[in-house]
Length: 524
Image (tube, one colour):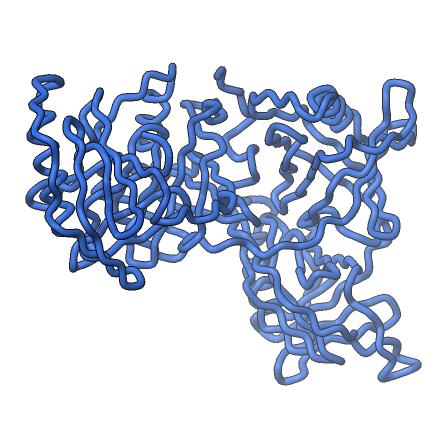
């Protein structure tokens, strides 16, 4: 599949420089409001503010530097976001009466040199915001206090928009057709838009993932031409036309407004182009223990490509520090280490099968090379992005759909790989040979590559023992090594002490839990 050019490496599926903000629970309440009516509860959620002055390190209130703007928007879902003057930032907030706490603050990593002192002001602001312990609202001014009750930050309220756009997620409800009429999106399709803190918008256009940069100034909004992956979806009818229309309309947007949890994007003449509904916030899935399936990957420079149709590439980061899955043709495994968002993958190995589907082997090589070069990761909802040391996005995963575990008994299992005699390496089944196993009524039967075989087995929970098998006595001269492979397989069966099934994959294990034989259900 032809790769798609990106405006830059951070536009598909959001950015590499900002950690994902964890969704926090909200205790509904407000700050004390109004000097004339002390104790009145005023809601903070859904308001946005611009910093007017702050307490410097000498204990003196000073105004914000001329030419800089420091903002704070408190969304209803417990997030506070804005600009710290140079970098975008975000975090979680909780409010209970007059008590306010801000946590999990993260920010982008730009360096601004003008005006002089902007980075020192930014650092001071982030420190004071993180130390917030209380708040009150006085005559359209928000005052944040520290644990001793001292005023540390004073904001004035913004008037241009009741809800700040950065940090919000939406799902499309309707879009204008060629005649300018708003029409609902096609049933069974999902189009999404997530506006990140560092001014990128991305999501699903219905079939393909997309990304674009955006700028916002008050209620004015401009979105750059979007780029997308290059899949083609034939169902439901009209999906690709809807996707093309949606992406074209994004580029025509000139303003936005939020009305009753709906986001409305309009053109320069005020005509409504796109109407979104608020997307329910979803917590980010953990890296470890989640089953991931590859959606797209970098093909060099600014290009990315979708995974070849019919090829499934998976990754499972286990709690014991091992990572493994299917690379599209072969099974692979390795080790990984984590340090915060830093990720290192090492000691990668794979089976040695060859698959003839055009492009699959090249895709597999690129995938394993990217995995070995991964330096950090981020999760965004049900998506995982792996990034190299330069901040380039390499691999884009989505959560794998749940596959019901195939039963041990009655399933036709086909061997994919087996361990070496020393247990240190894994070998693929020789091309042109097929080894099978069917467990039924206390007996396992199948083909060992040349001869048919059978053996009794005993099952106790996940403990499994197999008696020495008997087999027919044919000799097969081709392909080379088939008889040695058969002997190795039959000997390994007698070393089996347990099993585990993950979806359509069966692993037969030795007494120490190491994998001896790996099968797939119903396919080689």
